[in-house]
Image (cartoon, rainbow, N blue to C red; front, side, top):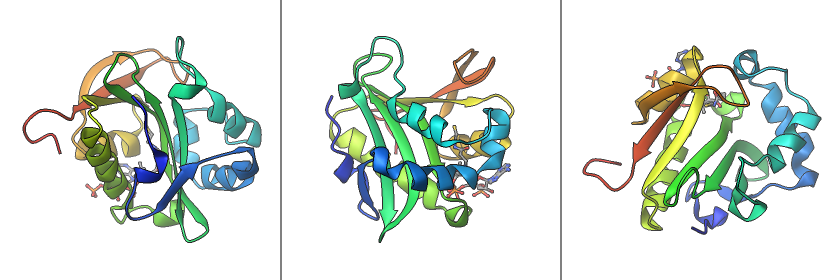
Amino acid sequence: MKIDIEQLSLTYQARKLKEDDIQSIYQLYQGNPLYFQYCPPSASKAMVSEDMHALPEGKTEKDKYFAGFYDQQKLIAVMDLIADYPDMGTVFIGFFMLAEDRQGNGAGSALVNELCTYLKNIGAVRIQLAWVKGNPQAEHFWLKNGFMKVKETASNAADCVILAEKKLNGDGAL
Ligand SMILES: CC(C)(COP(=O)(O)OP(=O)(O)OC[C@H]1O[C@@H](n2cnc3c(N)ncnc32)[C@H](O)[C@@H]1OP(=O)(O)O)[C@@H](O)C(=O)NCCC(=O)NCCS
């Protein structure tokens, strides 16, 4: 599956993030200490660089989409997508974070909604993701956006994460 990052949002300008963007991504990370409390260590530029290139086993750079969403020139969200992972037709959200000053107004949900619409249109079957067990903000957000818990498992990020998914092809998927 090929994802066109620029089509991910009609509201914001979306583009692939590059090394030059590390400083602005780092600033966005720094506004979200709760996330790093559950996913230590705390934010650093080295971590941004690592996230920019991180891949699950068996996947290559061509499957990875590390996207930034801009309102005018301001980076307001970062989203990491892995196409066809863990299987064909599934898109895995490896990371999603909104700038702190944009949170609490439905912007995160609206972006996820746009993502679902786009992925459904290009034939994706489902979206999967994981949050660290106990992170109240992440859990509330993903359940509110129609993701269903699949199982508890371990990941690189934490000993216990909740794997969740949203099917895009069923009735009422969006
Ligand atoms: C998760 C995130 C993307 C949500 O963005 P957002 O624009 O604030 O999302 P929305 O406004 O659409 O919805 C946020 C919901 O979470 C709730 N929420 C916010 N902080 C919360 C907290 N600490 N505990 C429980 N719920 C919380 C809000 O009340 C709201 O729910 P409601 O509409 O039922 O009241 C954003 O908070 C973020 O970037 N967090 C840090 C990174 C992160 O945790 N990403 C997900 C990791 S898997």
